[in-house]
Image 1 (spheres, helix red, strand yellow):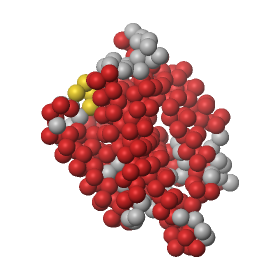
Image 2 (tube, helix red, strand yellow):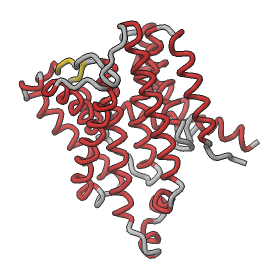
Image 3 (cartoon, rainbow, N blue to C red):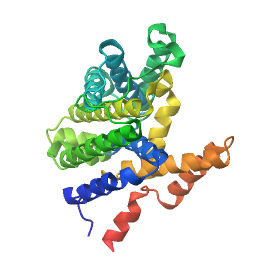
Length: 311
């Protein structure tokens, strides 16, 4: 039988990463932190995908989260990593709450294209706004934790440790949400929305809630990515960034809350290796990888673990 995710499993993974972090090379720590940031975005997309909705504009909230964190540091010289991530999450969640009244009305390709259009509007505005660095963006202040900034050699590990803890809490909360009545509505909405309405539940309300949760997670990931890289620019809202998130979602599958982080890590490894071997054709390697997954693992990489448990 397929087993549910337990907090102990996640806790063991977190402990292993935190224990190995100080001994890992800096590039490995950076790669893992970025993977956790993208995994948070994909975790939100997984919630939407369970409803049968694909957002082609999730980079909108990824970018809002990053710019909210960046502006907080630029205007008020705030550098606390938890504060910046909270600001990114709240800014994206509030924006999604407003836009959700519109987007929750649409389904299928209309939902995806409308989300993409809004994301590209933000991209155009940021490119033309010189106060925010225009197309070049701007740098963030060095990160601190509770007012303390460690030595340069330990800064990335500090951000990784925070990212692991935040991802752990987010995964637990999403896992708990998916077991609630509202969370369990997702497959029913995907299969037959009319029957959901006959049951007395509001599909539009459920989608609105899921959309806000997905956006908040994307803003959290955007702020984390900005803190990790130390720079933000309008490309974070570009359609290719949303494409990356969809790529990872399909690659990982929707079977478990661990899948988005696993998929993001594998995506980062494939991208890094492909770019190192063939800088001019690395996109071909990514495309081929996705094609293999779609053909042989239509439910994503996590289906490998599900098969093992089922047997």
